[in-house]
Amino acid sequence: MHAAPDAGDAAGPPATPHPQPPRGVDPTRPREAGWVMTTDIVFPHHANTMGTLFGGRALELLDINAAIACYRFARRTVVTASTEAIDFRAPVHVGEIVEVRSRVVWTGRTSMIVRGELVGEDPRSGERRLATVGHISFVALDDDGRPVPVPPLLVETAEQRHHHAIGGRVREHIQLRRVHDPLEDA
Image (cartoon, rainbow, N blue to C red):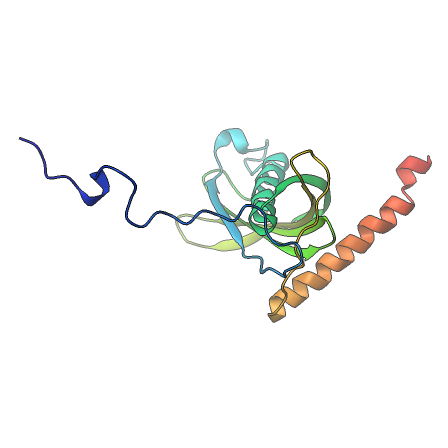
């Protein structure tokens, strides 16, 4: 006996295909940046000797999530240009849930600054705490690996304005560091 075909089993393309993402975006038209969220769990091989999430793993999760936020915003290949202040505020223990969220909060001509937050959650009690927060700078690239313009950021809500102002200060810090880097002057 044969089962009746499901609507999804029909030959040929589905009646309403998924819309294709835009190939690049108009770099002159302001765009909103939404949060990108990723959820994971801390396993023993992700932990340091204290049984908490290893800082390098937290940075990896933040960087990947932030890159996705930039890809979605600019619809271009992006690379990490710098990691800015990353604050580890609370531990995340083995067996706990990790939620990473990132959003573009500032844009320049070819660069973007992303705010990343890592939240730890006790799966039994549901207690959540902001464990890590920081900013990462990215540059958008064309197919030949050269910097390419990104759209201006649309900033409307109070939270967006607050994060945009912080992103602007992060950008100023990057520029000051490039003018006078005490490590390079030594």
